[in-house]
Image 1: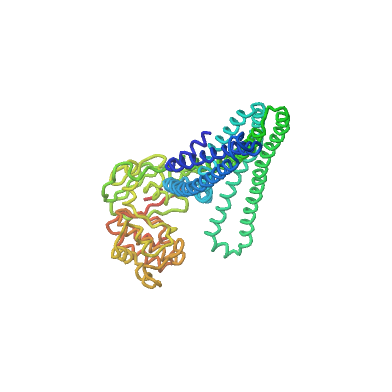
Image 2: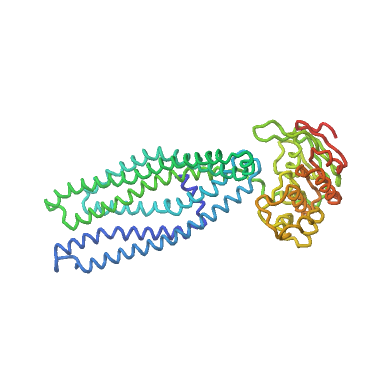
Amino acid sequence: MSDLRALLAYASPHRAVLALSALLMLFESVAALLVPWAGGLLTAAMLRPGESAPASVGAVLWGMLGLFALQALLKFGNTYLLGGAADKIVSDLKVRLYDHLQALPLSYYHERRLGDTLSLLTNDVYVLSGYISGTALALVPLLFTAGGAVILMFRIRPTLALLAVILIPLFYLLAKIFGRRMRPLAAQVQEEYATAIAIAQENLGMLPAIKTFTREQQESRRYREQIDRIFRLNAKQRGIYAALKPLAQLIATVGIVLVLALASTDLTDGRLAPAQLVSFLLYAALLTRPIAGLADVYGQTQMARGAFARLRQAMEEPPEPAGHVGIALPAVQGEIEFRAVSFGYGGRPLALQGVDLHVAAGETVAIVGPNGAGKSTLGHLLMRLHEPGSGQILIDDIDTATVSLASLRRQIGIVPQHVLLFNATVRDNIAYGRPEPGQADIEAAAVAARADDFIARLPQGYDTLIGDRGVRLSGGQQQRLALARALLKDPPILILDEATAMFDPQGEAEFLQACHSALKRRTVLLITHRPASLAAADRIVRMGEGRIVEG
Protein backbone atom coordinates (compact mmCIF):
# COMPACT_ATOMS: atom_id res chain seq x y z
CA MET A 1 0.00 0.00 0.00
CA SER A 2 2.92 2.35 0.69
CA ASP A 3 4.13 1.77 -2.87
CA LEU A 4 0.66 2.68 -4.16
CA ARG A 5 0.59 5.92 -2.17
CA ALA A 6 4.07 6.86 -3.35
CA LEU A 7 3.11 6.10 -6.94
CA LEU A 8 -0.09 8.14 -6.75
CA ALA A 9 1.99 11.07 -5.49
CA TYR A 10 3.40 11.36 -9.02
CA ALA A 11 -0.15 11.94 -10.26
CA SER A 12 -0.93 14.66 -7.69
CA PRO A 13 -0.70 17.52 -10.25
CA HIS A 14 -3.68 15.91 -12.04
CA ARG A 15 -5.70 15.04 -8.95
CA ALA A 16 -8.63 17.26 -9.99
CA VAL A 17 -9.17 15.39 -13.28
CA LEU A 18 -8.56 12.02 -11.64
CA ALA A 19 -10.99 12.88 -8.82
CA LEU A 20 -13.64 13.83 -11.36
CA SER A 21 -13.04 10.55 -13.20
CA ALA A 22 -13.35 8.63 -9.94
CA LEU A 23 -16.62 10.45 -9.23
CA LEU A 24 -17.97 9.50 -12.64
CA MET A 25 -16.97 5.89 -11.93
CA LEU A 26 -18.90 6.02 -8.66
CA PHE A 27 -21.97 7.37 -10.44
CA GLU A 28 -21.58 4.57 -12.97
CA SER A 29 -21.44 2.07 -10.08
CA VAL A 30 -24.62 3.58 -8.59
CA ALA A 31 -26.35 3.20 -11.95
CA ALA A 32 -25.16 -0.41 -12.14
CA LEU A 33 -26.52 -1.11 -8.63
CA LEU A 34 -29.92 0.27 -9.64
CA VAL A 35 -30.27 -2.14 -12.56
CA PRO A 36 -30.96 -5.29 -10.40
CA TRP A 37 -33.47 -3.32 -8.37
CA ALA A 38 -35.19 -2.29 -11.60
CA GLY A 39 -35.04 -5.92 -12.74
CA GLY A 40 -37.02 -6.89 -9.62
CA LEU A 41 -39.60 -4.20 -10.34
CA LEU A 42 -39.94 -5.48 -13.90
CA THR A 43 -40.46 -9.04 -12.67
CA ALA A 44 -43.14 -7.86 -10.23
CA ALA A 45 -44.86 -5.85 -12.94
CA MET A 46 -44.91 -8.84 -15.27
CA LEU A 47 -46.11 -11.33 -12.64
CA ARG A 48 -48.69 -8.99 -11.11
CA PRO A 49 -50.06 -6.91 -13.95
CA GLY A 50 -52.53 -4.20 -13.10
CA GLU A 51 -52.98 -2.15 -9.98
CA SER A 52 -51.28 -4.68 -7.66
CA ALA A 53 -47.93 -4.17 -9.41
CA PRO A 54 -45.60 -1.52 -7.89
CA ALA A 55 -45.01 -0.04 -11.35
CA SER A 56 -46.09 -0.64 -14.92
CA VAL A 57 -43.98 -2.68 -17.30
CA GLY A 58 -43.57 0.28 -19.63
CA ALA A 59 -42.42 2.63 -16.87
CA VAL A 60 -39.86 0.12 -15.62
CA LEU A 61 -38.55 -0.53 -19.14
CA TRP A 62 -38.20 3.18 -19.78
CA GLY A 63 -36.43 3.54 -16.44
CA MET A 64 -34.01 0.72 -17.26
CA LEU A 65 -33.35 2.23 -20.67
CA GLY A 66 -32.53 5.52 -18.95
CA LEU A 67 -30.14 3.74 -16.58
CA PHE A 68 -28.34 2.05 -19.47
CA ALA A 69 -28.11 5.38 -21.33
CA LEU A 70 -26.73 7.06 -18.20
CA GLN A 71 -24.12 4.31 -17.80
CA ALA A 72 -23.05 4.75 -21.43
CA LEU A 73 -22.79 8.53 -21.01
CA LEU A 74 -20.78 8.21 -17.81
CA LYS A 75 -18.52 5.63 -19.46
CA PHE A 76 -17.87 7.98 -22.38
CA GLY A 77 -17.04 10.92 -20.13
CA ASN A 78 -14.82 8.81 -17.92
CA THR A 79 -12.93 7.26 -20.86
CA TYR A 80 -12.40 10.70 -22.41
CA LEU A 81 -11.15 12.25 -19.17
CA LEU A 82 -8.90 9.31 -18.30
CA GLY A 83 -7.38 9.25 -21.78
CA GLY A 84 -6.35 12.89 -21.45
CA ALA A 85 -5.14 12.37 -17.87
CA ALA A 86 -3.04 9.38 -18.92
CA ASP A 87 -1.35 11.43 -21.67
CA LYS A 88 -0.62 14.26 -19.23
CA ILE A 89 0.74 11.88 -16.60
CA VAL A 90 3.05 10.26 -19.17
CA SER A 91 4.25 13.66 -20.38
CA ASP A 92 4.86 15.04 -16.89
CA LEU A 93 6.45 11.82 -15.63
CA LYS A 94 8.78 11.67 -18.63
CA VAL A 95 9.89 15.28 -18.19
CA ARG A 96 10.28 14.88 -14.43
CA LEU A 97 12.30 11.70 -14.90
CA TYR A 98 14.40 13.21 -17.70
CA ASP A 99 15.19 16.30 -15.63
CA HIS A 100 16.28 14.12 -12.73
CA LEU A 101 18.38 11.84 -14.94
CA GLN A 102 20.03 14.89 -16.49
CA ALA A 103 20.85 16.21 -13.03
CA LEU A 104 22.56 13.00 -11.89
CA PRO A 105 26.36 12.93 -11.78
CA LEU A 106 28.28 11.11 -14.48
CA SER A 107 29.24 8.41 -11.97
CA TYR A 108 25.64 7.18 -12.06
CA TYR A 109 25.96 6.35 -15.77
CA HIS A 110 29.39 4.80 -15.39
CA GLU A 111 27.82 2.10 -13.23
CA ARG A 112 24.75 1.31 -15.38
CA ARG A 113 23.80 0.32 -18.89
CA LEU A 114 22.32 3.08 -21.00
CA GLY A 115 19.55 0.64 -21.97
CA ASP A 116 18.33 0.54 -18.36
CA THR A 117 17.91 4.30 -18.39
CA LEU A 118 16.22 4.33 -21.80
CA SER A 119 13.84 1.58 -20.62
CA LEU A 120 12.66 3.87 -17.82
CA LEU A 121 11.74 6.58 -20.33
CA THR A 122 10.31 4.34 -23.04
CA ASN A 123 8.56 1.52 -21.19
CA ASP A 124 8.22 1.92 -17.44
CA VAL A 125 6.54 5.35 -17.53
CA TYR A 126 3.79 3.98 -19.77
CA VAL A 127 3.24 0.99 -17.47
CA LEU A 128 2.94 3.32 -14.48
CA SER A 129 0.74 5.87 -16.23
CA GLY A 130 -1.67 3.16 -17.36
CA TYR A 131 -1.77 1.80 -13.83
CA ILE A 132 -2.44 5.19 -12.23
CA SER A 133 -5.09 6.37 -14.69
CA GLY A 134 -6.74 2.98 -15.16
CA THR A 135 -6.14 0.18 -12.69
CA ALA A 136 -5.55 2.12 -9.46
CA LEU A 137 -8.30 4.64 -10.15
CA ALA A 138 -10.81 1.86 -10.87
CA LEU A 139 -10.18 0.32 -7.44
CA VAL A 140 -12.56 2.64 -5.57
CA PRO A 141 -15.64 2.09 -7.80
CA LEU A 142 -14.92 -1.65 -7.86
CA LEU A 143 -14.95 -1.78 -4.07
CA PHE A 144 -18.03 0.45 -4.00
CA THR A 145 -19.87 -1.82 -6.46
CA ALA A 146 -18.87 -4.97 -4.57
CA GLY A 147 -19.82 -3.49 -1.21
CA GLY A 148 -23.09 -2.09 -2.52
CA ALA A 149 -24.07 -5.41 -4.11
CA VAL A 150 -23.34 -7.32 -0.87
CA ILE A 151 -25.32 -4.85 1.27
CA LEU A 152 -28.35 -4.96 -1.04
CA MET A 153 -28.17 -8.76 -1.16
CA PHE A 154 -28.25 -8.83 2.66
CA ARG A 155 -31.35 -6.59 2.58
CA ILE A 156 -33.10 -9.09 0.34
CA ARG A 157 -32.05 -12.38 1.95
CA PRO A 158 -29.27 -12.38 4.60
CA THR A 159 -28.70 -16.16 4.65
CA LEU A 160 -28.13 -16.30 0.91
CA ALA A 161 -25.96 -13.19 0.99
CA LEU A 162 -23.82 -14.77 3.68
CA LEU A 163 -22.97 -17.58 1.26
CA ALA A 164 -21.72 -15.06 -1.29
CA VAL A 165 -19.59 -13.30 1.32
CA ILE A 166 -18.04 -16.61 2.42
CA LEU A 167 -16.74 -17.09 -1.11
CA ILE A 168 -14.77 -13.80 -1.07
CA PRO A 169 -11.77 -15.21 0.89
CA LEU A 170 -11.40 -17.77 -1.90
CA PHE A 171 -10.80 -14.88 -4.34
CA TYR A 172 -8.16 -13.41 -2.03
CA LEU A 173 -6.42 -16.77 -1.70
CA LEU A 174 -6.50 -17.21 -5.47
CA ALA A 175 -4.96 -13.74 -6.00
CA LYS A 176 -2.21 -14.43 -3.47
CA ILE A 177 -1.28 -17.74 -5.13
CA PHE A 178 -1.07 -16.14 -8.57
CA GLY A 179 0.63 -13.02 -7.21
CA ARG A 180 3.58 -15.02 -5.90
CA ARG A 181 4.42 -15.96 -9.48
CA MET A 182 3.44 -12.70 -11.18
CA ARG A 183 5.57 -10.24 -9.21
CA PRO A 184 9.02 -11.78 -9.85
CA LEU A 185 8.01 -12.55 -13.42
CA ALA A 186 6.97 -8.94 -14.01
CA ALA A 187 10.32 -7.71 -12.65
CA GLN A 188 12.15 -10.15 -14.92
CA VAL A 189 10.19 -8.95 -17.95
CA GLN A 190 11.20 -5.35 -17.20
CA GLU A 191 14.85 -6.33 -16.88
CA GLU A 192 14.80 -8.23 -20.18
CA TYR A 193 13.15 -5.26 -21.92
CA ALA A 194 15.97 -3.06 -20.64
CA THR A 195 18.54 -5.55 -21.94
CA ALA A 196 16.90 -5.59 -25.38
CA ILE A 197 17.00 -1.80 -25.55
CA ALA A 198 20.62 -1.83 -24.42
CA ILE A 199 21.59 -4.33 -27.15
CA ALA A 200 19.81 -2.31 -29.86
CA GLN A 201 21.29 1.00 -28.67
CA GLU A 202 24.79 -0.41 -28.41
CA ASN A 203 24.70 -2.22 -31.76
CA LEU A 204 23.34 0.76 -33.67
CA GLY A 205 26.15 2.86 -32.19
CA MET A 206 28.68 0.15 -33.11
CA LEU A 207 27.31 -0.40 -36.62
CA PRO A 208 30.56 0.53 -38.42
CA ALA A 209 32.47 -2.06 -36.37
CA ILE A 210 29.73 -4.68 -36.89
CA LYS A 211 29.90 -4.19 -40.64
CA THR A 212 33.69 -4.08 -40.70
CA PHE A 213 33.97 -7.43 -38.92
CA THR A 214 30.93 -8.86 -40.81
CA ARG A 215 29.14 -9.65 -37.56
CA GLU A 216 25.66 -8.78 -38.79
CA GLN A 217 24.31 -12.32 -38.50
CA GLN A 218 25.75 -12.89 -35.04
CA GLU A 219 24.39 -9.60 -33.68
CA SER A 220 21.01 -10.23 -35.32
CA ARG A 221 20.93 -13.63 -33.67
CA ARG A 222 21.86 -12.15 -30.29
CA TYR A 223 19.07 -9.58 -30.54
CA ARG A 224 16.61 -12.23 -31.73
CA GLU A 225 17.49 -14.46 -28.78
CA GLN A 226 16.82 -11.57 -26.41
CA ILE A 227 13.47 -10.79 -28.06
CA ASP A 228 12.56 -14.49 -27.92
CA ARG A 229 13.41 -14.49 -24.22
CA ILE A 230 11.02 -11.59 -23.70
CA PHE A 231 8.38 -13.37 -25.80
CA ARG A 232 8.60 -16.49 -23.62
CA LEU A 233 8.37 -14.48 -20.41
CA ASN A 234 5.40 -12.55 -21.77
CA ALA A 235 3.74 -15.84 -22.68
CA LYS A 236 4.14 -17.07 -19.10
CA GLN A 237 2.87 -13.78 -17.76
CA ARG A 238 -0.03 -13.77 -20.19
CA GLY A 239 -0.94 -17.35 -19.24
CA ILE A 240 -1.04 -16.55 -15.52
CA TYR A 241 -2.90 -13.32 -16.11
CA ALA A 242 -5.38 -14.98 -18.48
CA ALA A 243 -6.11 -17.78 -15.98
CA LEU A 244 -6.67 -15.48 -12.99
CA LYS A 245 -9.79 -13.68 -14.20
CA PRO A 246 -11.66 -16.76 -15.58
CA LEU A 247 -10.95 -18.69 -12.35
CA ALA A 248 -12.32 -15.81 -10.32
CA GLN A 249 -15.42 -15.75 -12.50
CA LEU A 250 -15.76 -19.55 -12.20
CA ILE A 251 -15.74 -19.36 -8.41
CA ALA A 252 -18.35 -16.61 -8.58
CA THR A 253 -20.48 -18.67 -10.96
CA VAL A 254 -20.31 -21.69 -8.63
CA GLY A 255 -21.51 -19.41 -5.87
CA ILE A 256 -24.46 -18.29 -7.99
CA VAL A 257 -25.41 -21.89 -8.70
CA LEU A 258 -25.32 -22.66 -4.95
CA VAL A 259 -27.44 -19.58 -4.31
CA LEU A 260 -29.95 -20.77 -6.91
CA ALA A 261 -30.14 -24.19 -5.22
CA LEU A 262 -30.89 -22.64 -1.84
CA ALA A 263 -33.12 -19.95 -3.29
CA SER A 264 -35.39 -22.53 -4.93
CA THR A 265 -36.31 -23.84 -1.47
CA ASP A 266 -36.96 -20.32 -0.15
CA LEU A 267 -39.06 -19.57 -3.20
CA THR A 268 -41.12 -22.72 -2.76
CA ASP A 269 -41.65 -22.02 0.96
CA GLY A 270 -42.70 -18.44 0.25
CA ARG A 271 -39.79 -16.85 2.13
CA LEU A 272 -38.60 -15.22 -1.10
CA ALA A 273 -40.75 -13.51 -3.72
CA PRO A 274 -39.95 -14.06 -7.42
CA ALA A 275 -39.13 -10.37 -7.85
CA GLN A 276 -36.70 -10.55 -4.90
CA LEU A 277 -35.07 -13.64 -6.35
CA VAL A 278 -34.49 -11.89 -9.69
CA SER A 279 -32.97 -8.86 -7.97
CA PHE A 280 -30.82 -11.08 -5.76
CA LEU A 281 -29.49 -13.07 -8.71
CA LEU A 282 -28.80 -9.91 -10.67
CA TYR A 283 -26.86 -8.49 -7.70
CA ALA A 284 -24.96 -11.76 -7.43
CA ALA A 285 -24.12 -11.58 -11.13
CA LEU A 286 -23.13 -7.93 -10.69
CA LEU A 287 -20.85 -8.96 -7.82
CA THR A 288 -18.86 -11.24 -10.13
CA ARG A 289 -17.74 -8.25 -12.21
CA PRO A 290 -15.96 -6.29 -9.43
CA ILE A 291 -14.60 -9.53 -7.92
CA ALA A 292 -13.05 -10.47 -11.28
CA GLY A 293 -11.97 -6.85 -11.67
CA LEU A 294 -10.24 -6.93 -8.29
CA ALA A 295 -8.32 -10.00 -9.41
CA ASP A 296 -7.33 -8.02 -12.49
CA VAL A 297 -6.22 -5.13 -10.27
CA TYR A 298 -4.06 -7.49 -8.23
CA GLY A 299 -2.31 -8.79 -11.33
CA GLN A 300 -1.75 -5.31 -12.75
CA THR A 301 -0.44 -4.15 -9.39
CA GLN A 302 2.26 -6.79 -9.41
CA MET A 303 3.33 -5.69 -12.89
CA ALA A 304 3.40 -2.00 -11.88
CA ARG A 305 5.40 -2.62 -8.70
CA GLY A 306 8.42 -3.79 -10.69
CA ALA A 307 8.35 -0.71 -12.93
CA PHE A 308 7.82 1.56 -9.94
CA ALA A 309 10.73 0.01 -8.03
CA ARG A 310 13.03 0.85 -10.95
CA LEU A 311 11.63 4.38 -11.21
CA ARG A 312 11.92 5.04 -7.49
CA GLN A 313 15.48 3.70 -7.42
CA ALA A 314 16.45 6.19 -10.14
CA MET A 315 14.53 9.09 -8.56
CA GLU A 316 16.15 8.47 -5.17
CA GLU A 317 19.65 8.80 -6.62
CA PRO A 318 21.17 12.05 -5.28
CA PRO A 319 21.59 14.60 -8.10
CA GLU A 320 24.36 17.10 -8.57
CA PRO A 321 23.85 20.36 -6.67
CA ALA A 322 21.50 22.67 -8.53
CA GLY A 323 23.32 25.00 -10.89
CA HIS A 324 22.65 28.06 -8.73
CA VAL A 325 23.61 26.50 -5.36
CA GLY A 326 26.78 28.06 -3.93
CA ILE A 327 28.39 31.43 -4.41
CA ALA A 328 28.69 32.83 -7.92
CA LEU A 329 32.22 32.50 -9.23
CA PRO A 330 33.24 35.98 -10.45
CA ALA A 331 35.02 36.54 -13.75
CA VAL A 332 38.34 34.78 -13.31
CA GLN A 333 41.88 35.36 -14.53
CA GLY A 334 42.39 31.60 -14.82
CA GLU A 335 44.87 30.61 -12.10
CA ILE A 336 44.33 26.93 -11.23
CA GLU A 337 45.61 24.99 -8.24
CA PHE A 338 45.13 21.34 -7.28
CA ARG A 339 45.98 20.75 -3.61
CA ALA A 340 46.53 17.13 -2.51
CA VAL A 341 43.66 15.96 -4.73
CA SER A 342 42.74 12.28 -4.69
CA PHE A 343 39.91 10.63 -6.57
CA GLY A 344 38.76 7.14 -7.48
CA TYR A 345 35.97 5.79 -9.65
CA GLY A 346 33.67 3.45 -7.78
CA GLY A 347 35.14 -0.01 -7.17
CA ARG A 348 38.46 0.82 -8.85
CA PRO A 349 41.93 1.89 -7.66
CA LEU A 350 42.51 5.61 -7.16
CA ALA A 351 42.79 7.49 -10.44
CA LEU A 352 44.49 10.43 -8.71
CA GLN A 353 46.63 10.18 -5.58
CA GLY A 354 47.55 13.38 -3.76
CA VAL A 355 48.01 15.51 -6.86
CA ASP A 356 49.51 18.99 -6.38
CA LEU A 357 49.53 21.19 -9.49
CA HIS A 358 49.69 24.94 -10.00
CA VAL A 359 48.87 26.58 -13.35
CA ALA A 360 49.37 30.33 -13.69
CA ALA A 361 46.73 32.49 -15.31
CA GLY A 362 47.25 32.57 -19.08
CA GLU A 363 49.65 29.62 -19.02
CA THR A 364 49.36 26.67 -21.41
CA VAL A 365 50.35 23.47 -19.63
CA ALA A 366 50.68 20.20 -21.51
CA ILE A 367 49.75 17.20 -19.37
CA VAL A 368 51.24 13.99 -20.72
CA GLY A 369 51.47 10.39 -19.61
CA PRO A 370 50.31 6.89 -20.48
CA ASN A 371 46.65 5.91 -20.74
CA GLY A 372 45.08 5.63 -17.29
CA ALA A 373 47.54 8.05 -15.72
CA GLY A 374 44.69 10.39 -14.67
CA LYS A 375 45.12 13.16 -17.24
CA SER A 376 41.48 13.48 -18.31
CA THR A 377 40.34 13.05 -14.71
CA LEU A 378 42.01 16.37 -13.88
CA GLY A 379 39.78 18.14 -16.40
CA HIS A 380 36.65 16.38 -15.18
CA LEU A 381 37.36 17.34 -11.58
CA LEU A 382 38.08 20.93 -12.56
CA MET A 383 34.59 21.18 -14.09
CA ARG A 384 33.11 19.23 -11.14
CA LEU A 385 31.78 16.52 -13.40
CA HIS A 386 33.11 14.42 -10.50
CA GLU A 387 33.89 15.48 -6.95
CA PRO A 388 37.33 14.76 -5.48
CA GLY A 389 37.54 12.25 -2.66
CA SER A 390 39.95 14.53 -0.81
CA GLY A 391 41.88 17.73 -1.38
CA GLN A 392 40.92 21.07 -2.91
CA ILE A 393 40.71 22.57 -6.38
CA LEU A 394 40.97 26.35 -6.56
CA ILE A 395 40.52 28.89 -9.32
CA ASP A 396 41.93 32.33 -8.50
CA ASP A 397 42.27 31.11 -4.88
CA ILE A 398 38.51 30.29 -4.71
CA ASP A 399 37.59 26.74 -3.71
CA THR A 400 35.49 25.38 -6.59
CA ALA A 401 33.52 23.21 -4.13
CA THR A 402 31.93 26.40 -2.75
CA VAL A 403 30.78 27.93 -6.04
CA SER A 404 27.70 27.24 -8.12
CA LEU A 405 28.10 24.73 -10.93
CA ALA A 406 26.65 27.09 -13.52
CA SER A 407 29.06 29.94 -12.72
CA LEU A 408 31.99 27.50 -12.69
CA ARG A 409 31.22 25.68 -15.91
CA ARG A 410 30.42 28.88 -17.80
CA GLN A 411 34.09 29.88 -17.44
CA ILE A 412 35.60 26.60 -18.62
CA GLY A 413 35.54 25.33 -22.21
CA ILE A 414 36.49 21.84 -23.35
CA VAL A 415 37.36 20.14 -26.63
CA PRO A 416 37.19 16.40 -25.87
CA GLN A 417 38.86 13.53 -27.70
CA HIS A 418 35.48 11.97 -28.47
CA VAL A 419 33.57 14.94 -29.81
CA LEU A 420 29.90 15.12 -28.83
CA LEU A 421 27.86 16.72 -31.60
CA PHE A 422 24.10 16.89 -32.12
CA ASN A 423 22.12 15.72 -35.13
CA ALA A 424 21.55 19.32 -36.17
CA THR A 425 23.05 21.94 -38.44
CA VAL A 426 26.61 23.20 -38.28
CA ARG A 427 25.22 26.53 -37.06
CA ASP A 428 23.26 24.89 -34.24
CA ASN A 429 26.27 22.88 -33.06
CA ILE A 430 28.57 25.90 -32.89
CA ALA A 431 25.83 28.06 -31.34
CA TYR A 432 25.51 25.54 -28.51
CA GLY A 433 28.51 27.24 -26.91
CA ARG A 434 26.56 30.39 -26.01
CA PRO A 435 22.87 31.24 -25.50
CA GLU A 436 21.38 32.95 -28.55
CA PRO A 437 24.56 34.07 -30.35
CA GLY A 438 24.44 36.17 -33.49
CA GLN A 439 25.49 34.80 -36.88
CA ALA A 440 28.55 37.07 -36.84
CA ASP A 441 29.66 35.55 -33.53
CA ILE A 442 29.20 32.02 -34.90
CA GLU A 443 31.21 32.78 -38.03
CA ALA A 444 33.94 34.49 -35.99
CA ALA A 445 34.29 31.38 -33.82
CA ALA A 446 34.44 29.19 -36.94
CA VAL A 447 37.17 31.40 -38.41
CA ALA A 448 39.15 31.27 -35.16
CA ALA A 449 38.93 27.47 -35.21
CA ARG A 450 39.91 27.35 -38.91
CA ALA A 451 36.59 25.64 -39.64
CA ASP A 452 35.13 28.25 -41.99
CA ASP A 453 36.87 26.83 -45.10
CA PHE A 454 35.34 23.35 -44.88
CA ILE A 455 31.98 24.77 -43.77
CA ALA A 456 31.85 26.88 -46.94
CA ARG A 457 32.33 23.71 -49.01
CA LEU A 458 29.42 21.88 -47.36
CA PRO A 459 26.20 21.59 -49.45
CA GLN A 460 24.22 24.09 -47.35
CA GLY A 461 27.12 25.74 -45.53
CA TYR A 462 26.18 26.56 -41.94
CA ASP A 463 22.71 25.05 -42.52
CA THR A 464 24.09 21.59 -43.37
CA LEU A 465 22.82 18.76 -41.18
CA ILE A 466 25.76 16.74 -39.85
CA GLY A 467 23.94 13.57 -38.65
CA ASP A 468 24.11 11.72 -35.34
CA ARG A 469 27.31 12.65 -33.49
CA GLY A 470 28.48 14.47 -36.63
CA VAL A 471 28.77 11.26 -38.64
CA ARG A 472 28.69 13.14 -41.96
CA LEU A 473 31.90 14.98 -41.09
CA SER A 474 35.46 13.73 -40.88
CA GLY A 475 37.13 13.37 -37.51
CA GLY A 476 39.17 16.51 -38.07
CA GLN A 477 36.10 18.52 -39.07
CA GLN A 478 34.31 17.35 -35.94
CA GLN A 479 37.23 18.52 -33.79
CA ARG A 480 37.20 21.93 -35.47
CA LEU A 481 33.49 22.33 -34.80
CA ALA A 482 34.09 21.37 -31.15
CA LEU A 483 36.84 23.99 -30.93
CA ALA A 484 34.61 26.62 -32.56
CA ARG A 485 31.86 25.79 -30.06
CA ALA A 486 34.29 26.14 -27.15
CA LEU A 487 35.71 29.41 -28.50
CA LEU A 488 32.23 30.89 -28.96
CA LYS A 489 31.78 30.32 -25.25
CA ASP A 490 34.91 32.52 -24.85
CA PRO A 491 36.04 30.91 -21.57
CA PRO A 492 39.08 32.11 -19.64
CA ILE A 493 40.02 28.43 -19.06
CA LEU A 494 40.18 25.92 -21.91
CA ILE A 495 40.73 22.16 -21.73
CA LEU A 496 41.97 20.41 -24.87
CA ASP A 497 41.60 16.71 -24.06
CA GLU A 498 43.44 14.75 -26.78
CA ALA A 499 41.93 17.26 -29.19
CA THR A 500 44.35 16.31 -31.99
CA ALA A 501 43.87 12.54 -31.70
CA MET A 502 41.75 12.42 -34.86
CA PHE A 503 44.23 14.36 -37.04
CA ASP A 504 47.02 13.24 -39.33
CA PRO A 505 50.31 15.15 -38.88
CA GLN A 506 49.36 17.89 -41.36
CA GLY A 507 45.89 18.24 -39.89
CA GLU A 508 47.38 18.38 -36.40
CA ALA A 509 49.75 21.15 -37.45
CA GLU A 510 46.87 23.16 -38.95
CA PHE A 511 44.75 22.58 -35.88
CA LEU A 512 47.50 23.75 -33.54
CA GLN A 513 48.05 26.79 -35.74
CA ALA A 514 44.33 27.53 -35.44
CA CYS A 515 44.60 27.14 -31.69
CA HIS A 516 47.65 29.40 -31.40
CA SER A 517 45.76 32.67 -31.55
CA ALA A 518 42.74 31.17 -29.79
CA LEU A 519 44.85 30.12 -26.80
CA LYS A 520 46.14 33.61 -26.14
CA ARG A 521 44.89 35.22 -22.94
CA ARG A 522 43.51 31.87 -21.75
CA THR A 523 44.66 29.29 -19.25
CA VAL A 524 44.92 26.02 -21.14
CA LEU A 525 45.21 22.42 -19.99
CA LEU A 526 46.54 20.62 -23.05
CA ILE A 527 46.01 16.91 -22.35
CA THR A 528 47.91 14.99 -24.99
CA HIS A 529 50.31 12.18 -25.78
CA ARG A 530 51.33 13.49 -29.22
CA PRO A 531 54.77 15.19 -29.42
CA ALA A 532 53.68 17.76 -32.01
CA SER A 533 51.12 19.20 -29.61
CA LEU A 534 53.77 19.91 -27.02
CA ALA A 535 55.11 22.80 -29.12
CA ALA A 536 52.04 24.81 -28.16
CA ALA A 537 52.74 24.44 -24.43
CA ASP A 538 54.60 26.77 -22.07
CA ARG A 539 55.30 23.88 -19.69
CA ILE A 540 55.01 20.08 -19.67
CA VAL A 541 53.69 18.06 -16.73
CA ARG A 542 54.14 14.31 -16.76
CA MET A 543 51.77 11.97 -14.93
CA GLY A 544 51.98 8.30 -14.06
CA GLU A 545 49.72 6.07 -11.97
CA GLY A 546 47.64 8.97 -10.73
CA ARG A 547 50.59 11.11 -9.63
CA ILE A 548 52.65 13.94 -11.09
CA VAL A 549 56.09 12.54 -11.74
CA GLU A 550 57.65 15.55 -13.48
CA GLY A 551 56.85 19.20 -14.07
